[in-house]
Image (cartoon, rainbow, N blue to C red):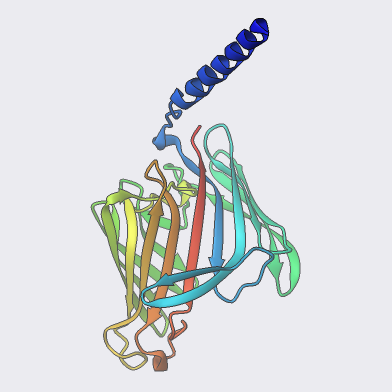
Length: 269
């Protein structure tokens, strides 16, 4: 009986020490500079999926959002994005990046005109390793882009976009940006398109000087809200837009239904 009692005490003591040891183990440190996004989950209104719907309250309104898509990101040993797997409900799309000496071959599987198609395009790179279709400043930030139907000019200050002017054949749009100067931006998944803004975006105001089409002043406002994890990384970004005057025909919902929720997961090699 005494032997059995001693065995029981030794067992309980061992369990106690084991529990204390597990509790005392510190959280493994991570190198935030190497963190990259491996999953982005997008939710919005008007979508239907097998996942439970989520109700959120923002700016005095209540929204019911559902899963719209999940995107998974895979990187090579150099930290370059090689596969972007995009999975809307009941679909399976991807974008694959193959890196050449002065170019990137991009293969995309997507839906076009209700058909699943695969497209391939080659992105040519300049001596900075950046897409030649854009123009950049000496630090690698994009400043101008030329498209078939227009021109985009970017104004920047202290590493952040302040204004973007978009010139089209019959319309000019001006986007004005605000940032949280105390919060670093999300990790850049596409560095070959030029440097991203240094800080997190908090607001975009869209206006047009073309008074014959729109009323003067801000036509559309987009606000950004964030939640952070214990390491200070963005775990959720909420983007909500509101049109000032629906009668102008601005292509967004007048009741603020233009809302997107983005949840992020990371790895830090």
